[in-house]
Image (cartoon, rainbow over all chains, first blue to last red; front, side, top):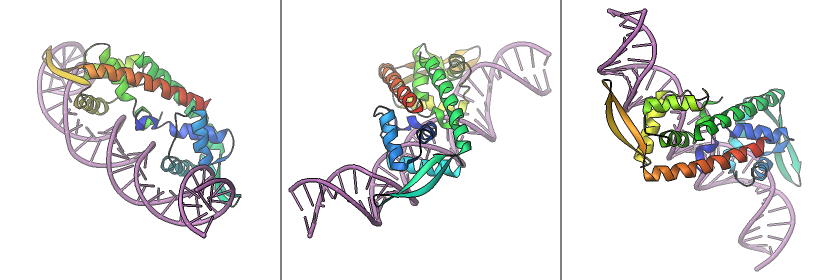
Length: 104
Length: 104
DNA sequence: TCTTGACGCCTCGGAACGCTAGGTATAGGG
DNA sequence: CCCTATACCTAGCGTTCCGAGGCGTCAAGA
């Protein structure tokens, strides 16, 4: 699978993961791997910048926590983030259906 | 819909269109629009470089034709192109299923 | 004790690719 | 005569994903 396949869909998936419950970066990576059946095993260099981007866009909000001596930045959806998640899900369905139509 | 959504999937769709019968660039644009139900209305600056890329990769082969005083570069799938199309279709199904799993 | 691996965060720079904007040219209709 | 549709092309921009590297904690095992 081409590396660029993700482009434009990663944000939606991150929003979906965080929307299912607050999570820190490392956990987001694990959730993406789990929920995709192992298909998406994404490097940190992909996820962390994406989280920062989403926070800068006001779709996520973060706060530091400490657990077992390790510090974590925990993200949750903002109100705008939740509404964006709805839009992105719709976009994905439209997109996937269109691609299916072309590849059929 | 985000502009980058296409990334990595356009090649598969172009291969599918040309695989359904030889076509020139302008016709590829029309077919993509038609088969996607109007979702993909792609600019020439997207399609032509993609066609050149696919030909450079040996997946398409082109030849010039003239119809009604207009010259066209008509593309067809090479043998490698047809096999690549099969792979890309499989990649897409895997990818789409994985995204569905995450967004569910 | 020292090393390895999992956990957990970060950033810089390269590479790929879609698109905007601009260019050329022919045919046909108003 | 101009405008639209047809038909081709490319330079350069912006975005985004990823590889590589860096920092630090903790637990298990050699």
